[in-house]
Length: 368
Ligand code: GLA
Image (cartoon, rainbow, N blue to C red; front, side, top):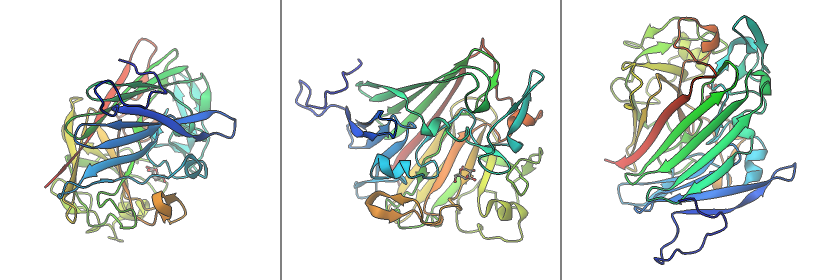
């Protein structure tokens, strides 16, 4: 049942509502921004703002049962408006890079902003991470926040009016499910994801190099020096990119004689899952030993961008005034391969008017 937005008081059973709305600030154009707090019965809390669909807080228990925020997130809207590298945000219309900001669709060439010179990155200058979404809270046993945004035909250079719906669901098993859906009125390209940076220690002043990562992926999408795919897929076996068994993120991250590590300044690459099906499958697992926290990722997508926060340099400030320093967060962005619109051999990212784009990703938290 949809809950009327301003009801943050206790419900009839005397319990705090599972979803609450509060004010999060005002955009330079005067638009009011809201913050939604979702809670499950275990005590896990997720906060999401309708500005960029940004996750501003996500708590997970440690082995003592203590919940703490495990993401890089700002205290206020102002923090996000100062410019942060996609903290917690929804990414679209096209996540990851498109070479030189150009692609051809049905014989017509489209030109995008080259906001990550010389390439286009994450939907453009004002991607889905910087727009105001329409939010609908759903106060169900597993609370949901539905976000809708319509990108105009030609917005950020992409063809087609795109209607996007993203539903965040905080589930009973301490997982956050994200369902993405989109339809278009003209043939276009779509690659939606979420760009949350995680730090399972619960303390953003730590780096993430001791986190142990495994990825159910036997292939990598190798890139050139501008992080654009070469077009081939290479086996990860015998390289610092083999996470088919758990490895600490920091173990091989500085292998300077590996060209891919050099180009990414660490890990900033797309891995292709061994299981190519579009079933919801377990694709990644991360373990932080000091707290015992585990995060598992499930997705219907074919690939994942694992980014080890190599461009973080302390200039973006997270909760409590902590500078987000080098490698203090990592991202696991489920998606299609980068630059797919220019790569005929990659799985297609084209969406036609009679089709519906649907993907699901789940981030599940536990301890061991
Ligand atoms: C991504 C890219 C990185 C970097 C970050 C934002 O995930 O792959 O190269 O641009 O976004 O800093």
